[in-house]
Amino acid sequence: MRPIVQISLDLTNIDEALETAELAMRAGVDWLEAGTPLILAEGLHGVRALRERFPNTPIVADLKTMDGGYLEAEMMAKAGATHVVVMARAHEETIKCVVQAGRDFGAKVMGDNLGCPDMVAGAIWLEDLGCDFIVHHIGYDERRGIAARGDRMPSPLDQLKEVVDAVSIPVQAVGGLSLEQAIETPKYGAPLVVLGAPLTIDADAFKTADGDLEASLRMICDTVHAQGDKA
Image (tube, rainbow, N blue to C red; front, side, top):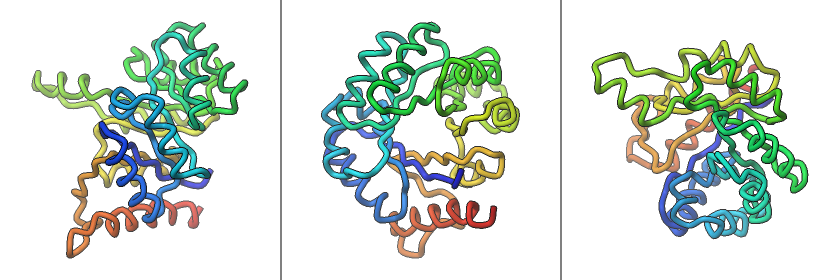
């Protein structure tokens, strides 16, 4: 699979999300994500607004579904989402419902292994239940809580290769990665690179002299896509 750049629009209003998405698309981003904060703040309206503005772009609705799986997936697919997210810690029946709704309404299902005691087993479980993608995810609270206790903060890179090797569907790694690390994930066999927004461009190699965010993002996209050209 050619490396894909996905920008997570973790914003809380539609206008700002659309503005950031416009910039991202100009820079070469492939997929847009209606992040959980945007969905909480704007719901289906946020997804619809993205679909209206970008009629041909894949849109991920980061629902983090735990229950009511069929209805949530149906609503987001009808609003224009091409991908929906269900959690591995949800009940098996919920995951099956999301997968069925995805088939019924033309959306791909991304299974998120956040919080699984065994992250590799969680990914295998999601694939076995019919998910199309794996989100290998170390949560915000988990990372901060462990670090606050003075222990090493976990990273998705810790088990990324094991997860990739355990499943046959595409994997993305999420949670506390620096830009440099995110850009490197295709080298682990995880072709879906996720960039957070609002963006913090903190990698010296991807800063422009004038602090132009769009130009910096374009450099990141070019670097990710070039990995596919070399494959």
